[in-house]
Amino acid sequence: MKKKRDVQYRHEIKYRINGGTYHILRQRFRAVMQPDAHTENGLYRVTSLYFDDVYRSAYRDKVNGILNRKKYRIRIYDLGDDVIHLEEKIKNENVGYKKSIPLTKEQYYMLLNGDTSFLGSEEYADTSGGDFFASDSAVRLSPAVIVDYIREPFVCTAGNVRITFDMKIAACINGTDLFNEGNIYETVMPDNDIVLEVKYDNFIPDHIRQMLTGISAMQESVSKYVLCSDKISRCV
Image (cartoon, rainbow, N blue to C red; front, side, top):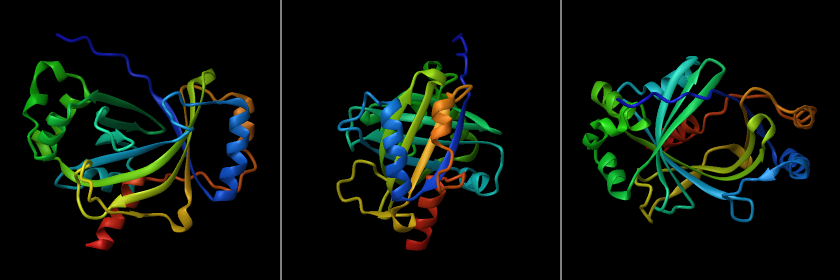
């Protein structure tokens, strides 16, 4: 039997900010933090296909403020197929954690077409794959919406802090295949506002916390999934 892995819960704080605040904070963070090693010129594109069940539980739980919830997505970067991850994001009150497994492109298309059979094997027990299989068996998961944005990330080893600026957040309005070259995206926030996310393990170093004070933004529980789902509903 597979040994259950230890889970590292992380805190997550979100803000919706404007372009002016972005430029101020970006200069502050660049002075004391490092860019993520996986970026090219400091940026990368994130595209995720979210799944939901027949009750729209992921959407409704977020909108209704349910403290204990989860959602599933398949994520790629810069529209490439070399890295494809099936992720499960689990929220328990004020902290959360993420499970992730790699997929082949063939496996991706199996899930897109509703075939979860390969995830039922022992290999995927206690992973996002095994949990996806169990959830699909119970309440039937299906593709809901594609969320797309450009991310600028900064990291700090102290506290394992990760700060990201997510911009040009958009929903695909004409399909749910991540690799369809004909996908059409429309932005979902007014004036192309930016989502600032701060993730950390147990603490934020004082000098970074001070940089977040005095900004013209309120802490806000921004959900890209909800924003993009609402955009799709208006386009139907």
